[in-house]
Length: 286
Image 1 (cartoon, rainbow, N blue to C red):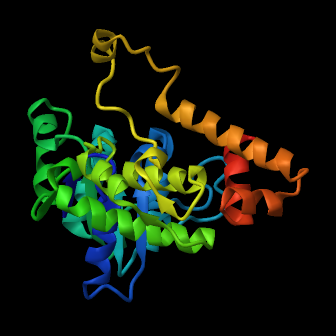
Image 2 (spheres, rainbow, N blue to C red):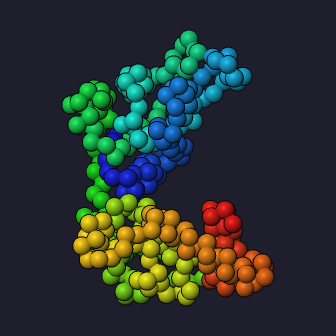
Image 3 (cartoon, rainbow, N blue to C red):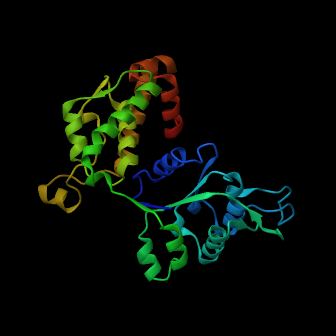
């Protein structure tokens, strides 16, 4: 099974939903980002290795396929793996057997593989960057996730869902006012659902009250670059993320100064709980 979509569209949540709605619900769900491993260790991490297979292999290692036996293995960023690994993965999918690094006999595995990518794999096949036979094996049931800008009717339900989670974590009620909702709907969301959650998380720290307004949402303005120059506006000082982090750091430092360094009081002043304040202080190096 192959899940296709831009970064941040929710490919892993879809894979999880497929697992928990299937007959494999009693089995494990194992998620792995193929891009997170160096090529030299990818095979060992996914297929496992035997004791003594290489220096440092003091015990045997089941690998992700072994841990996902009788369940589902989610392989994110599948378009980033090299040709050699593609060939070995195809063999596992076809035969239901794998050979651990340093092993001499194949091992049977019962794993449903759900792969995902934000690349155009069909184009990669045509360019020779991805094996055609593996592409056909994975894409028997392709699922395409449209970007958030193409399903604006989902923006507010998602925002309310994320805001409910953030309210629970911060220990205070949170809601969006009408202007904030309008601004969320109008934004193009290049980072999709991941960007939406990040924006709301930052807004809960920057906002003073329980109602989040449009001014609390750290969103890029519609006009950037040459458009800004054409209107005579100054170019932004650094990236949006850098600006937001500077603002958050200033607010936290001011709250700490006002409270005499007492973090519980500073958290109350900021309208968040101690855990949220500590998390932001660690993120900002305060």
